[in-house]
Structures are given as C-alpha cells and as structure tokens.
Length: 190
Ligand SMILES: [Zn+2]
Image (tube, rainbow, N blue to C red; front, side, top):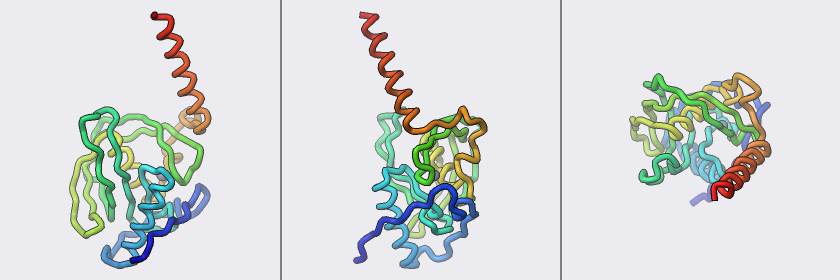
C-alpha cells in the first residue's frame, strides 16, 4: 500500500485560497482516497483541528475535522475524525458567538470571528455514505471555518476590526499575564 505523504500547505496570498472549490464527482477515485490520506497526516503533523482541500492546493469540496474534546462538556467522549465531502449547511442557529480562530494557511495570527453556535449539516463521508448531523459549539465553529475555505473565504474576511486580531505571541503573553494575576490574587486571599 502507498504510504501517505505530507502535503505543502498553501498560505495567505495564494489564489487557490480565494477560489470557490468544485464538487467531487467520484469519491471512489483512488486519487481522491489518496488525497484524503495525505490530508489526514498533513493536518495531524501540523496540529490542526481542521484542513480543507484548497489549503493543499486542491480546489475541491472536501475538508477534514480532526477529533476533538469539548472542554465545556468533559463528559462527552472525544469525537471521531470527520472526512467531509460536498457538504451543505442546511440550518443555522440564530445565536452566534465570537471566538478566537487560527488557520494553518495564516501562520502566527488569530482572529475573533462570529459563528453560529449550532448548525445542521449534510455531507458525504469517504465511503460514500450520506451523513446528516447537528454540530454545536467547537464542532460548529470548525465546520463553518472549513466550509468557508471551500467557498474561498478566509477568517480574515470575517474579522471586522483590527482589535479582533492578535499574533500568537500576543495571545501567549496575555494568557501568561492573566495566569500571573490569578496566582497573585490567590495569594492575597490566603
Ligand atoms: Zn483555515
């Protein structure tokens, strides 16, 4: 069997990231199955929570959502890795929430983006089975971010104010500062 290969990740400035991607006609095409295998290792080696085909220079309606644990609901087991092909978002919640997002195609930068907190979606998985599911919170956020990629939209297009942007370094410093403050507050309490 062929060994999966790590793909090069397209970064901001590459035209492929701004193009609407094409549907996949034949999921069983070995080339598509190989692409999925390659994307899985590319995402995992880059520590990404999601990866869309245009991010590896393939303008196709395909993306992955890595397994994740919902920090707000620790009793729910870790999700399985999803392979999402030709997806549609069929319903969205009225409720939206702003949250920080990063992107493998935009290194070292994070942005606060408003997303629907719950969405109903439909897609085909890698064995050609139709899947219908409702995603919430982090799952809904990642799905919307990846779905944007196949529409040629980046999270930067959804950031409305430069105050909603931060470098990874700035975020790390802010977290460190917050932890320091918490520690000193705890000391004062004692
Ligand atoms: Zn992204």
